[in-house]
Amino acid sequence: MQDLFSVPSCFSSGEKQHLPDATASAATRSGQSAVTLVYRAEIAGQSRLVTVTWCRNLLTHGMQVSIEGSAGGGKDKTGVGGGGREHGNGNGQGGGGDGKSCSACKVEMQPWHFWRKYGAKQFQVDGRAVDVVWDLRTARFSDEPEPASDYYVAVVSDEEVVLLLGNQKKEAFRRTGSRPSLSLQDAAQLVCKKEHVFSKKRFLTRARFHDKGKLHDISIECSTGNLAAGMDVDMAIKIDGCVTVLVKHLQWKFRGNDCISINKMKVQVYWDAHDWLFGTGLRQALFIFKPEAPPLLPASHFDADEFSDFCLFLYAWKVE
Image (tube, rainbow, N blue to C red; front, side, top):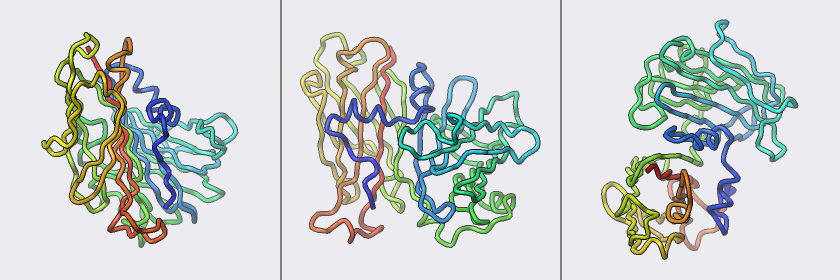
């Protein structure tokens, strides 16, 4: 599979340029968490990227779904507004800047707008209809922007559900009137997660480095809350509570990388904490977790059970 999210040589400044507009905008507002999930699914006869962004602040939750290769013209199918709005630059293209068209529906879930949590929208993708259907009325949220349970978001193409998020699968199939894709589990693959987390000294997220693997708890902790005070700082990266990377004297090693093992899978970890130590105002550090390809095997011989092309980007925003 093509490496969609390769680590740039100067990965801190390079990766920031690839942030989706919705996620980057959310992250610039202090205290508003955001997570972007990029899936690969078979849509309109081709393998395409579907980007789902969840945002959260004190009052609202937000969701945005965009589909690569859309020709625009998205329309609401609920008859009551549905909370969906299309974003683009007027010519059928989203703001990706890569020449590929992209349409999106945006949902803002506010406590006093119950109907916005239930809706549907249709796009034309290369001349074929694609539907995005969601029900978030009973969604349960934990500490993350993404719902934990009791919801569904479905993408339907050619009368098949090609991407299904959430645990209310029966309700999704019943409402869409569509059958699951014969290769739903294989075709809908999570290839990238980009998350923005705000904290003083402990940054938490969760990730599954393989489709069939365990969901791991990831934490990044610093030995002092005042990173810019000129004090000696240590940083620990923990997987499921166990220290896998320990960086002493972070002020001298604010950029680096290490290779760790997670359930026999080699994972490259990159970090850039320069702005934590030397930046001003709202400061972020970037952490990248990327599974390593097995040695002595050409890329064309990779098996889905042996290798994951998933990549995690964690933006840790320091709040004083």
